[in-house]
Amino acid sequence: MKVYNGRRVFTRDNTTRGEASVFVQNVLSHEPDGRGLTNEPNLGEPGALMHIPFHSPDGFEWGYAGSGPADLALAILADYFEEPPEQVLGALRSLWAPRSKAVALHQEFKEQFIARERRNEWRLGSDVIEAWLQTPSIQTQLIELDRQDEELAEIRRLDEEAGSADAESAD
Picture 1 (spheres, one colour):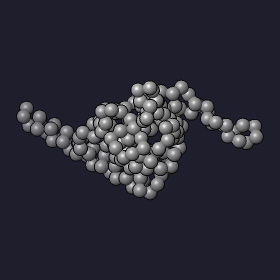
Picture 2 (tube, helix red, strand yellow; picture 1 turned 90 degrees about the vertical axis):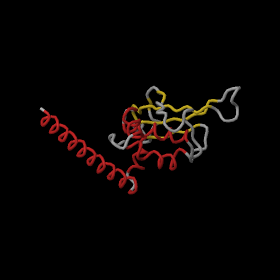
Picture 3 (cartoon, rainbow, N blue to C red; picture 1 turned 30 degrees about the horizontal axis):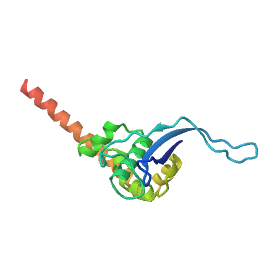
Picture 4 (spheres, rainbow, N blue to C red; picture 1 turned 45 degrees about the vertical axis):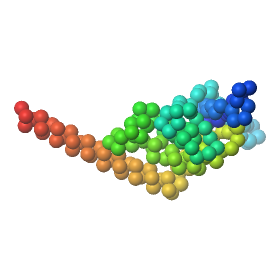
């Protein structure tokens, strides 16, 4: 399980809004104590969540439905699905690129979680993301995404066959 932590860093130069930073941590253990109660999760070292700049050149934000929150939603989902930035950006820029779950779902994720977050510090566990992914509307989108990927793969296969046949006939 992963935990995504958002925090605003306030400085003398920025005392009203604070600079948004987001870190991701792996949960190393989350076991019940001797009384059957669950202890706080044992978290690994935090690492900065990678910004995949597409909507916002200024980085992450939360608390409204803009470009910074869209990039944050995209980055969280790309990390969750373990999709490399190249795949995500390729899917954003081309209809012929392999599909990205992060790209397909990030606007809804932004609306559901990121835009609504008003606190200066927050924590979102991957278990919450997993529960959201199990909702019927999201499951329907994931099924459609798989169907589109299959169609693209078939188009690529047919295109390669046609290219091979053209090359053979030219010889």
